[in-house]
Amino acid sequence: MSWVADLMNPYRWITTVRNVMFDLNIIKSHEFPLPTICIGNISAGGTGKTPHTEFLIELLKEKHRLAVLSRGYGRKSKGYIKADAATAMPQIGDEPFQIKNKFPEITVAVCEKRVIGIERLVAEDKSIEAILLDDAYQHRHVKAGLNILLIDSNRPIWQDRVLPFGRLRESIAGIRRADVVIMTKCKSLSAEETRWCRSYIKGWKDIPVFFSRMRYGKCYPIFTGAAPFEQIRPQQEVLVVTGIANPAPLREEIEKCGAKVTMMKFGDHHNFTQGDIAAIAEVFSSIESNEKIIITTEKDATRLLQRNDIPPSIKERTYALPIKVEILEGEEKMFNQIIESYVTENSRNS
Image (tube, rainbow, N blue to C red):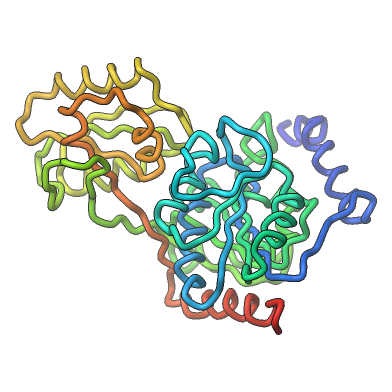
């Protein structure tokens, strides 16, 4: 009788009525005279929004003046903030901070009200040619020119339910607002499974459907003065410290190298406390190996860097493992062409 519970779910009705009011223009959406690309999801967390945003930055930054606008989840501030080299992570949130650090040439700003954020961005910098809206699929006050919907292939939205019975922020009918769908975190989907996914999504709306996976790069030290590190070796002791929605793929990647993994999992967007640092140091100290290391994600690294109480024994052995997005099935060129054509054809100078 799960369908009965879904029908009686007040959150489902609230989000459905809200979407209908936007569709009927009872609640107004704002359009802007420059390309705006929304990268978002229907499920709560864990679909890979930040790596896909970075993929788009890499694709567009050489030819276009970009800005990234985010809500700045978990930040200790309010209102509009435009990041610069001196902006601290708590002011803008871990993900915008990570993007600004990796792409200092890109304009990065945060604002809960995206309409105000875009207005401020274009007023302050007339050279901005395109804006990437991170995690704004449900922020319908802005009518993005291109909506990219991310769906976790390991927990697709058609196998989930609307909050609080599942993780969906709205019903799967939200697919109809998408212009492009990417099935993310793919591992070993068969040709039959990819055909089924495409057919199901196109049953809601006839749009391009792509498949992507995360590719891990080489570990790098997050603190200055860390010991050189080439690669994870078989039987190496690794303490994995994470504060992300789903750390299982990271653990699997490290274990594929033959390492012996000890996990310390914190909640998504977790801000590390003095007690957390002490606990990490205690667990790391208990591991009996002269070649033990700590590995974390780039997002967690931004939060660890804010702590001034991390002992040297931890700093010299802590590394971040970066991830990048790869579009599968030889369709990256097609995906890139869709994005580049949209930005070029809708630029303020076109």
